[in-house]
Image 1: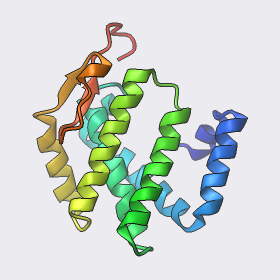
Image 2 (image 1 turned 60 degrees about the horizontal axis):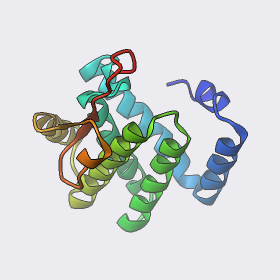
Image 3 (image 1 turned 120 degrees about the vertical axis):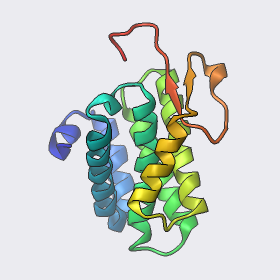
Image 4 (image 1 turned 30 degrees about the vertical axis):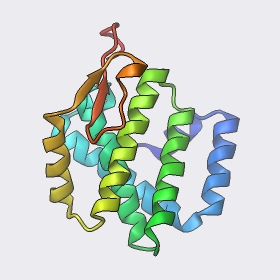
Length: 167
């Protein structure tokens, strides 16, 4: 993950929104970056580059990313509700300013929620525990094709797009 390249790709409104968010929570920025890098590294190791496409591996990455951000911020901060609120704000920001279509965005938001839910249930899982748990959830992940397919269930979801070039 090249942070500078990511920042340069943002438009001014996205940068401004990110700056405001980070200035309100400056002590959570470095743990969030660390969690993001760790998440991408784990996903590269387990899935290669397939986690960058709309796939079960992408669903895994979003849930793991949210768990990792909350866990990293929890090491430096007290109060699970505030940490989960930060995790939601920063990952929602990412979804608002990413170039996903509606269905992919909703799927990502669902998987983000699942990661935060898992952190809320057990904030002390070791790295291998959360990876194993999320990998087990891949076996029951749901392929969605329409907005109506999205449910608030305890399952990972991935998008089935008609155009295979997009996947």
